[in-house]
Image 1 (cartoon, one colour):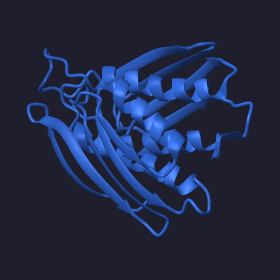
Image 2 (cartoon, rainbow, N blue to C red):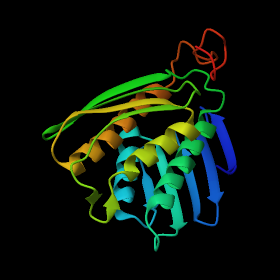
Image 3 (cartoon, rainbow, N blue to C red):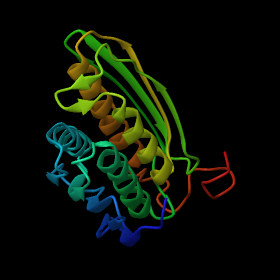
Length: 213
């Protein structure tokens, strides 16, 4: 993954914000996040279903999110989907700064009609994805269902998140995907929240996150 251009202001008082741009021969993507926002989004990836999912991510995490993407959609949706995960994840990473004061862990159980999905994460700065989600159809509309794992993998990698997503049961593929994004949103909201008792402390016995416990 080539380095992204970024600017960040990881101050809780000013709002933990960051802007990241990623420009390659395949995609041009820019995203801005505010972890201390109101869940306001402005998304235009060129992929309608992905826009819908990123809107859900913003709305239910209360993270303001703006994303604009131009990609090689005439080939397929792979590059734009994956690279948007990298860019949103990198923006979250930058907005977190040194990760002082955060709750660090988050979890959510999200029901959506017949579907139930569990998401747990650790803002450990040690990227890892456990993906226990299967689909009964290869596509949702024009989008390959296999691309959702690519998005979450890219997000976890660039955000520095240990991320576990498990669909416990469900039949409707739309519900399964949406519950994954909503679960991520709710878990992020919990994990990025600031602990007023430890605002100046990194939540790690080693005093730093990344290769530590």
